[in-house]
Image (tube, rainbow, N blue to C red):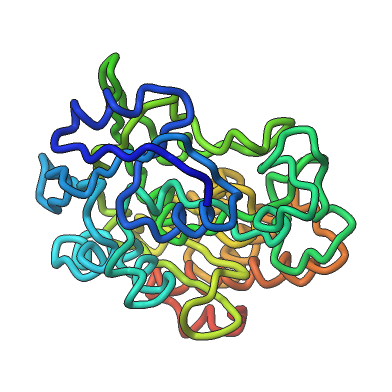
Length: 334
């Protein structure tokens, strides 16, 4: 691990001021950052410790719920307001990592976690995300865990978060603070596709601190579900996941949100799937058409072609659960 300066912030103002130098990183639970620093994949010159900041509340706010960036994943997952009004978020958080990690990891840190692409974490291989312009060893390498949506000729790394996928489907809004002021960012716009700059993963500006996430209440949010398919029951990243939120009237879908995980370079909102659902009757045929639309632009590699069909079936299953027709949809489930 390389030498670095350490600052312990007591207020948000102190934190953003200390982080204003280029390259400074905030540290809270440290479940990703510390590992990457040990590997020398990340080498921040300054660490700003924000564990003392009073940003861990989960509370009603207006018609919705406000979740502080320092709230622990386990606390959010089991909070009555989240379980009752945003079930997809509770399910996504409970499916992530292990109980020990969830007890340490924070909402803000979860949003900013880096990819688990093995080439990104191995300094002996080429990675445009780690070193812009170095090339991508994953392309042409072993790609079972890699993305099929949102990829580019420069990067095919999969985004790892479960929580962020649910936040996209729930129309969440992420609030950030810097020395120049505050701003709000839609969860669907927070992460960026790699394009020609895989090293740029979010729209955050240098020194910006995530302070909280707002979850707007809606009939869709209350009828939301998250389904994750992985190699083992715990401490495994998604091979495919789906977060859905739907509103129903007289047996038809009147509005919908669809987000996919485990198969894309960022939490993947599928407006194509949403369009295929709205105005259609609840049922497996509707769900399969939406799943086909969601994966129509997939660009699989040699080793991850199975993810296309797996993601389709995962989405069908999630829609069946969200609409209460899971017995009908089970025939299309993985």
